[in-house]
Length: 237
Image 1 (cartoon, rainbow, N blue to C red):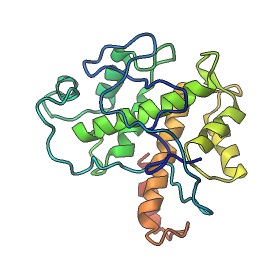
Image 2: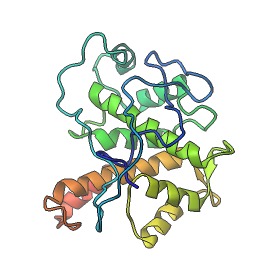
Image 3: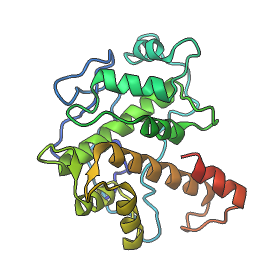
């Protein structure tokens, strides 16, 4: 199945509570609490036939949105970590996620994973993200965390390769066995995939798929890249 409407992240997995952090940045229990603005809704609907149609995630309406309302519960928290420039860089994001206990009993996110999280939403290539992108990232992280926890039933902080394959399929991606094998080889450590690497994989899948999707205007599952454009899309993540 693919997630309806925006696929690849966002809606809670069946039977899983929403996970994340409070807008004030305080963890809600050992694995974090519900974050306002989390995109809910059950999975459902059959995936489109052929190609890469589910895309594994889009950008649900935050880009170009008006300035946040003063009573937005995430705004005060964002301004506290963003500093004087009003944007969040990778080091600020890493501190934010670590201090908030977002990963719970899992290992904290590495700085490199935080960099590619920002790159996923960094449409102007500044290496930072604004408030709307900040909220969008937490929506994605919530969905990915729920998906990981569904397969990591013993809370070891790892999943096995076949479970990683199931998780990718559950998020709406349709890739070949060869591509799945390449993903497993890239992101496993000692034959298992840790949460940090799992999130890094999800970020890259979403970002590259979205770059492809924007160029596939006819939705045929194929595009033509100029060399420099290809390098820009792949090396930025």
